[in-house]
Image (spheres, one colour):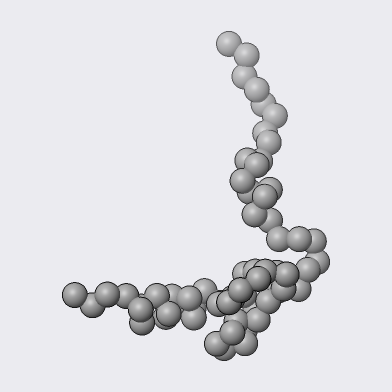
Length: 61
């Protein structure tokens, strides 16, 4: 049985990699850098603020 020893990263990982040397967008709540490049449209939140916003808007039933 022939084994393929070459490894290629999944296309998904390549597609989600940020653009080379593009600065990160600021969080709209705390102004800390986010995981998103500045070219990202819409509201950008850092992971902490995104989690807090999710907890705040979650259904408490």
